[in-house]
Image 1 (cartoon, rainbow, N blue to C red):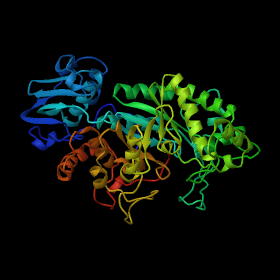
Image 2: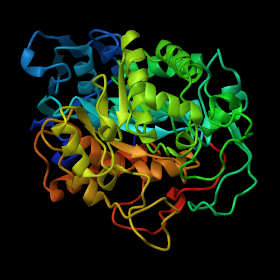
Image 3: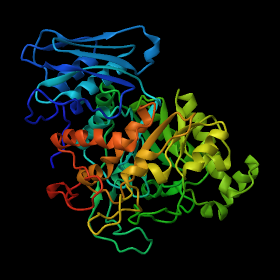
Image 4: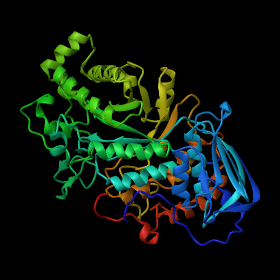
Length: 512
């Protein structure tokens, strides 16, 4: 599959007089009324309205006319909030109103889904999201993906009204982002000599080199592309664990500078962590300075997950730090790291985001907590007074297999069927909901799309729609929506089957 940044959707031949099911949208709007009739996009139809929404409409609807027909307008209606919109499609006109250009962009995405073969059904929609944060994590550290695929993925998020791409840029198995002050991070940390074929520590290793990184200019362009579509991009620099790729490049940052490390080839968790010297703190702060310059989003994720304290327990420098900071033991140094980095980001005008391990060593500096270690951790984070994005593994880890069948590709764990994802109800009070795609077993864009879709449509539905849909209603709309994914060439997994779907099953191939 050739991955490109799609600007206009593909179309299929369908007669203009389509049934009401063609108005099925994912995520489900708060209110939708099918009026009857259609609006036909002829050669003279154009769009008038503020940018970037008007430009987005031209792109995704394939508009070439210089006239009107489609009107996008800003309104001072506070009831719509920052992302809500109203949409009215008549046989002779299309009108969309919103309080912000982001809201107008979501109206355009609804038109994009409704549009087929130059025809849009006449509907009246009033809509706004349930949750402010509707995200997808993509791990580009374990496997690097080309920029063209990242553009495509951003576009797919936007079509589903998902508004955050969480890029996991660094880990033990690779450092993927250019840091000008520390060039060895990508020169050495961006390359590994092979990868594990399974998840156990003693798993066999292949001898296939893997490499790749993103320049800062490439990422700035991706950020701009996302902003035009209402998708913000949050970078993650995982610290103080998951750093073996960084330590391979700069050994003095580790707890045994005389130890020569390579970029980790096995999956799982490395026992090697950053030391607690001021030099190491300065290193991470320097990285965050450059990252914050590339990504203007208000949050930077600092990791904080799965930090083994073994090296700190054996370190004299760590022992001194524990005494100086009045900590109860080496495991609390993870919290000390979180506090230092949270404070630094605040000085840059950013807030830290962090995994829910922060609950175990105390919240410091008001971070945004990503509760991943089960649904109960979402409740614990809320009870602790944190602002929370729900990411519980048993409902949102989309890299898990959907079913145990002979045809299902390898995965880190399972099973997580579509029905379970669709049935998750995030508790009241969370800022948002996010689906995770860790890439140990997602080595190609085809594999990413296979795992993401259609389960990511359920994440989008649960994050946007005010009242959870009944399973039959969701499946009925999904059956229509799968045709849209087909026309876009999305390599989704067929629902409720583990059998091959022709050329749609993940294929081995080059990354990106």
